[in-house]
Amino acid sequence: KQEVTQIPAALSVPEGENLVLNCSFTDSAIYNLQWFRQDPGKGLTSLLLIQSSQREQTSGRLNASLDKSSGRSTLYIAASQPGDSATYLCAVRRGRDDKIIFGKGTRLHILP
Amino acid sequence: DGGITQSPKYLFRKEGQNVTLSCEQNLNHDAMYWYRQDPGQGLRLIYYSQIVNDFQKGDIAEGYSVSREKKESFPLTVTSAQKNPTAFYLCASSIGYSNQPQHFGDGTRLSIL
Figure 1 (cartoon, helix red, strand yellow):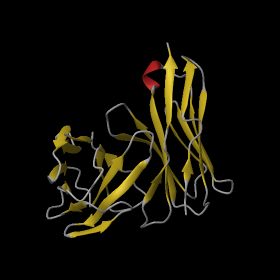
Figure 2 (cartoon, helix red, strand yellow):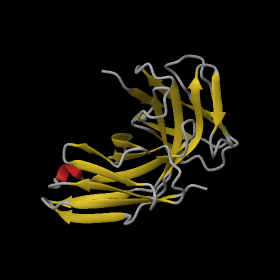
Figure 3 (cartoon, chains in turn orange, green):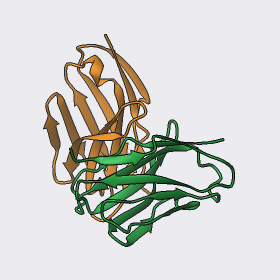
Figure 4 (cartoon, helix red, strand yellow):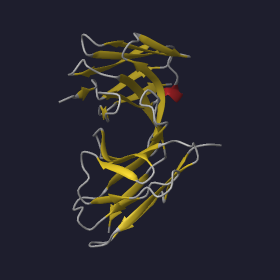
């Protein structure tokens, strides 16, 4: 059974720092992995999607990496800003026509 | 602008009452999904539909029902059989291919009176 874990559950860092959020999954046979952002009381916004054949994806100050063999993905945020404060969720799709398994998220707080 | 609209934003249910949550998308997406989110928990899949007039149960379908009569609409009914319905409900959609990201609505928060 695929399980997705995100540690830590919460993180506070000063503005301007670079930071890394972690995601691990138990079954390395995945189809793709997606990072989402969720603001309080809102839905999820897709940030980056990495196909199983890819090692990383970049969008602006965000970079996501994927290491299937070790069952890990990281989301790197450069030069953090207060507006980056949100919960970040990692989600894994097991197969092409399979459902997505979500982690519980990391709640990020950027200190001004 | 294209997107997913969920309504209402807040909903209250009395004991023994069925309530229906609305989800409409104008993205021309084939697939639609309903998730439940509880505090400190990941999203759990309730139902999903890959095409019109077809839907499948997710991990926690008991006490819920759906319909998919139109491509743009995927309403979720929370029945009285769902004993713990208080949660944040999220609707999502995607192009029919699984290598495309899911787009989410802003959610409906359901509470029991």
